[in-house]
Image 1 (cartoon, one colour):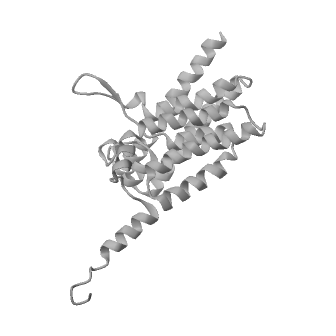
Image 2 (image 1 turned 180 degrees about the vertical axis):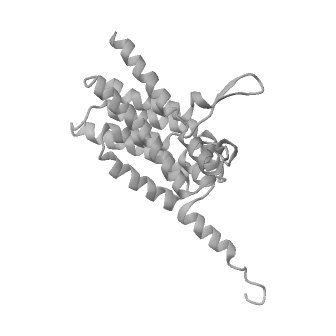
Image 3 (image 1 turned 135 degrees about the horizontal axis):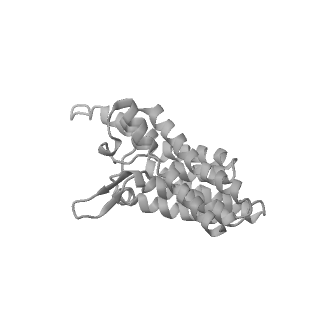
Length: 230
């Protein structure tokens, strides 16, 4: 019976994570389908491109809460089952990245599950496991996004920070080691979803944002010196 209940919680976590908040928010604000815009993902970054900063922020917050809620649900029903505590947000990340509500049939007959990259859901899972982690992961991820300039890399950094935070806490005896495993599994899931972005990072064609994007734009606006000026 315990296995049955645990399976039900993981299924519920997947279904909660599958809620396409970005799709809903963009549809309500602009009437557009975010899947047809830029990367086609439903996460906060692409929603920001489609409907503006506040829409992207709202999406990110909602996606974080989806994963956090699954942790609270698992803890409330099975307070002693640490494995269920970490697998619930993993289920939410899987739902966010491969949403059952956004399944499509491709031309070759295969099914394609649309969604986001999982960055906000990963941070939300960490928040659910240990709330103060938010005060570490969010600022450092934001700084990396602004100064390094790649949203995909910042997403991966958030997952790695989750791993690092829980590794340190497990090392000092402040939390169970399974929490660190949560961060590691989340990092793998995010890296898998970001394969196209990683490829563009390696060949230097990934989109820049933040400080570096602004500097690049400013340098393009500076007129080049003529031969007489040299």
